[in-house]
Structures are given as C-alpha cells and as structure tokens.
Length: 120
Image (cartoon, rainbow, N blue to C red; front, top):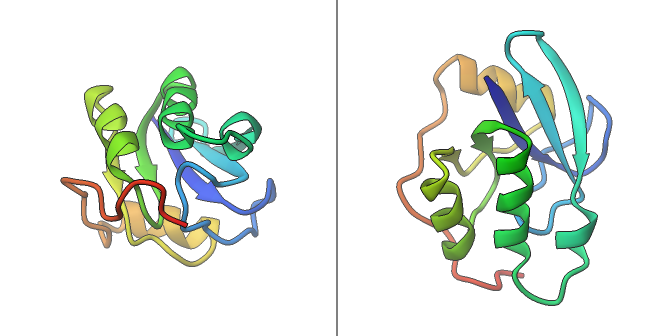
C-alpha cells in the first residue's frame, strides 16, 4: 500500500504541509518496502485554478490508497473519495511523525472536506 503525505520539502525530516492541493511535494511511503519517495506537485502548485483536483489526479496516478494532510477542500476530497483513497486531515508534525501516527491508529479518517474551496 502507498501512503501520500503532503510535505514542504523532498527530504525525510520535512514537516507536513497543511495544504493538499498547493503542497510542494507528496512523500510517498511504500508500506511493503518501508521506504519513501517524493512526487513533485509543480503543475498543481502553480495553477491558477483546480489545484486540488489536479493534485488528486497526480496521487491517484501514483497508486496511492491513503492520504495524510492538514486540510482538504471539497473538490479535491470528492476526487479522492471517488478514487477510493482514504483521507486523513488534521495531520501535523514531521513526515515520520505523521506516518507513525497513522500506523499507531492515532489519526481519524475524514468523511468530508474540512475547508472551503480556494482555501488560502
């Protein structure tokens, strides 16, 4: 299973980025290999609109099954939900702390967007 975490940099000691659609990178944690890789979010990050939906498509294409993030808007949430991706919001701390919290079952699965569209 692949878990995507919104992060501020492409390093393992980076903090979680609270924004889904406009994060700079997604850390992709491969549970089977127990390793990280990073996916750049440049197209969505620099788009004038639709960043959340574009970002959702990027992580769907990467085979992600779980998303850990600070916040997720309504259009992005609908796209992720339609793709069968579990979304966890309110995630903070470092990349490793976020992954640990997921596996320790300290995070609550989100059932809807937690911010309005075009959240700044």
